[in-house]
Length: 468
Image 1 (cartoon, one colour):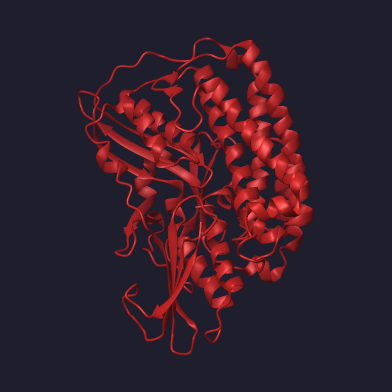
Image 2 (cartoon, one colour; image 1 turned 135 degrees about the vertical axis):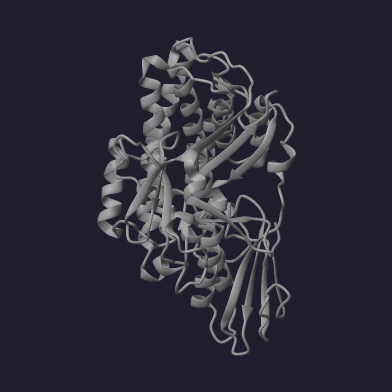
């Protein structure tokens, strides 16, 4: 995709409109979606303000109204072609709640298995295809090669292995569940089919191979990517915020499939709550210049502000947030990586660039977790679904999507039709923090009106870290 960096007089994009120039970076490259960055310079050429514009209105909350609730999990998977399994899973959990459905243990295990396998493929995609060119080739590398093609040229054997493992991961899901992009395998009350012993054995062997690849990825990244995270790199787009993620209520450990939401303040203190009570703790702010919502921590009682010096109600989600809020990880290799990470950066770690490191720790965890699930003989129990009767009710479903805590909230009428819906998508939690990180990065790299391609790519890197 070609990129246009437009410079014009400031600025219809800013309500206070100081004189100066407006830099438009459009589109933001190597992200899983569409966005534009507008940077306003004052008369002295310093960054006065910036905005990350989300340029598409999705409308899913409205057009699923009136639909049979059991159809909705097949519809909302279209929200994101990168993480459809997360929407499919959260949506089914919400419909379960509306209808009072219970899910047999094997059904829960198959749901978690598919969702966690999807996490693996997503993390491989983002780290190597989207983020790695900035570090392997450098933020100042020529625009035409600072991409996955450049990675292929610089490290062809690595690129071939990455493509092979991601393709294999996608095909593993497709072979068992039928569809990998727009899934239909999870159903209200459970899962659509049991797993045979032969399928378990085949998937287990393939997932053990993925675990070995995850260990290689961590080793490669420490030598070739994380070693380049000096103080300047760690400060790029760095802000101080709170964090949100899911933990196991029994021991506070990382959980991607189910648990309590933990909302952590910047000082590390936190509060746990059932995700069904999210409206008591999270608010949704609206800005006139964006189609995206701006969630904030309502329960902190301080309102909403993206001011860099005195932010209010701002928290972050996604990989770094989940590592910050959890007390531990219940798989040995990922726990060892978490301990090393905390020894280096503390808890909570605030550097935006550390999202990449956290992403690979989660890759290790996801691979370990799917091996655990497949080693559980209960996963092949033929009882994977309970009977369901459509009725009036309200249900909230929440899982950890790669980009953050994904919340689906539905209300059904007496016929089991959707009467009302509210969604907080993983990326949405980070829209306010991304705006803050963009402004911080722009202020750091643009001085006295001097604008280079490398500087603008560093501004993009502040967005890319969140994997929006």
